[in-house]
Length: 402
Ligand SMILES: Cc1cc2nc3c(=O)[nH]c(=O)nc-3n(C[C@H](O)[C@H](O)[C@H](O)COP(=O)(O)OP(=O)(O)OC[C@H]3O[C@@H](n4cnc5c(N)ncnc54)[C@H](O)[C@@H]3O)c2cc1C
Image: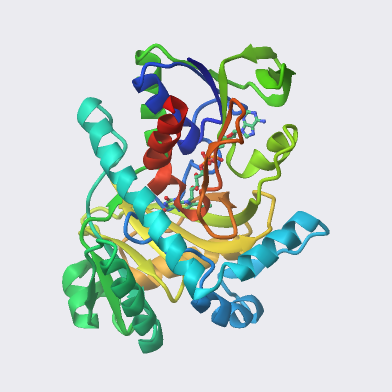
């Protein structure tokens, strides 16, 4: 089959690669000048296979007033005069039930496990270098209450096959000695997940596109998809700013920008942007770099050692649309590094970045065929796109094979 994949973020690159791997004739296109330059550029770098709890949960609902009203909170709401945002908000509140949260966790874990297996298979077949490391993840809980909440989640996930350990503060420090340098921080304990991994999302996109081309696929950049040409009830071409591209099937993998393009086909996607930020700072010479990736739940910040640098990602601004990076957000992340790993990094000139997580109300992505058309959706991966990309690609390719 000739398949056109629109969008070369980590989701589109993985989908195009898997389809080419299965023998399809693939054309990947993107508005940007290279793969992985938008939301998949400098995210938190976590392959968070066991840490997939949906954002909508009873705990989020309980914490919502405090999250939204406290000054300097990592979570902010940017209300707009847009009925889609309010409809999304209502769906999000409905998804905060315990039942939906457990169901979403199960769905996401299943997809994450499929992703782990698929990426391992791909890495065994290809010669890629994208900063992949299985270095474990430590989630630090600021209060006994947060630790108890995490304990409950560990129990729920244990029944779904996850291997996670609840640790005391002492045990956390033994797991990640680099934290020893930060005494007196308010932690009540943590959760250790041994087989969590990290990867550089941008380098992964480049590797996927390189292998796509080696397998005979085409990748075009600087091409904007504007609409679709329909013929006899099916889509026959995508209309771009550089002419039409025909195919037998079309995959929409346009991340946070999926809404307007899908609307051209009469598809309403329940996806809203949740903006977040990252900084990337070099380790100082002569210091022992951290081994594990660390999530500080109190600060809602993740720290991932990526080669010679530390990647720090944080904040969730629901409904924010621009990609500006305000100075106070950078300062908060720089302070977080200085307090969590004193003296570890050179903080003078951090590389700063912002991205819009393409979020569904339940955090579960939309992967599959649109009705009985020749259009397929691979969108809405929210805070887990890097983690879920390989599994979503395999699931979508499987549906296309019927
Ligand atoms: C601060 C932050 C931290 C994160 N940390 C993690 C993490 O640690 N682990 C994890 O798993 N996930 C993480 N995520 C989430 C992850 O980054 C996203 O889920 C993922 O990048 C989404 O990938 P995508 O391919 O769907 O979207 P994108 O990467 O945005 O790709 C979509 C592509 O479509 C193209 N496009 C859009 N419209 C058109 C058009 N009309 N024509 C042509 N091309 C078009 C764009 O140019 C873009 O390249 C994080 C996100 C943020 C913001």
